[in-house]
Length: 444
Image 1 (cartoon, rainbow, N blue to C red):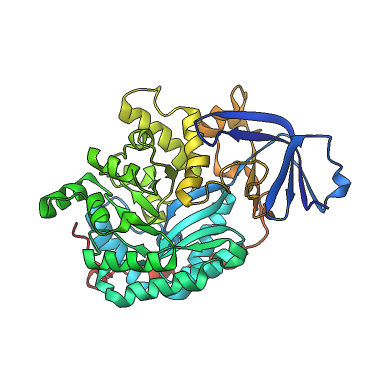
Image 2 (cartoon, rainbow, N blue to C red):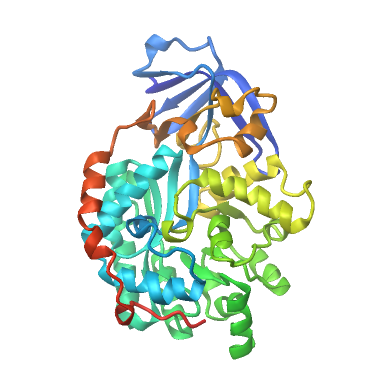
């Protein structure tokens, strides 16, 4: 007996290989266990034969959204670093604030961020932060999917590399396979070459990849060229980082030669346009990346630079900023944006054959989106409305790994009241900002 029937929905269809988007009406989605068994016209399946039935008339079934780069527990510092330069953001705000972190802060911050993302239709996140054992516990409780990396700086020495590797070993495949783990050195400007090589050795020994920030601004790239005659991407190439699968955060400061290097490697780029706008970092050359065959996925980054963990904002800003950068409203079309949000984000996340589609054989990470609100009417183009009109609050129901984790806007796995109370209890301690207590110095 099949486990779950999603009845009489619309289904977003995308191609695995090219930007195409269409909608099938009047469909049933049959889920058995953690995977999709069938997508078929309504009326062929008997609802009485299913353990759970979701009546989804008028709702759109689409793949659960993937946040390809975030610092989810950073939500506990939301609003504490506003209207400052990127240098001040790091040195005077973020890194002093993070000296206050305790393991329980990460646990409750992760739960708060996961609750926010579930409400916005995010079922998977690639997260790069500290005390990630506690973050993993939060993911297990939430019922979501995650690629977790314990962030490390070169100043931590070999001990930091070993700690990050120990986390990878312990939590790989946790939560019934919903958690994967990678090495997570912070960036070339905070990790020297020997430290990067040590991280690569651990990644190779463990059979995992590396999640790292690189070329976050053109200023970082120019500084690297001035000091070493190498772009940050070339540093990753020389230290062997690109010899393992990599998830590269931002790459706003990419040079033309960097494209050819990345096109030959197993890599993906996480794109967080709201952070780039807020910190005046520039605009990543997304169209050029995709033109070189380099997958790009949507990301929020952390909530201290983006304020929310709302992927719908990232989706919309991807379209708008790329049009502006190209000087053409014909750039970054609706099918291309949906391609990035689904298939390419799944590639960046490392699960292209399991996520990013509502099709038989794929993991049952599915969201049901309500397009009946006034801001969607009249619905001449469902895909246009999906990109330019949809708000996080339009997500009605969220399914991850075949299990319903939010139904009709009600979270089923997390206690919102307890989470908010726990986070608020630490506000006074967490908001103390002592510059000489910073955990690291930003000096690209």
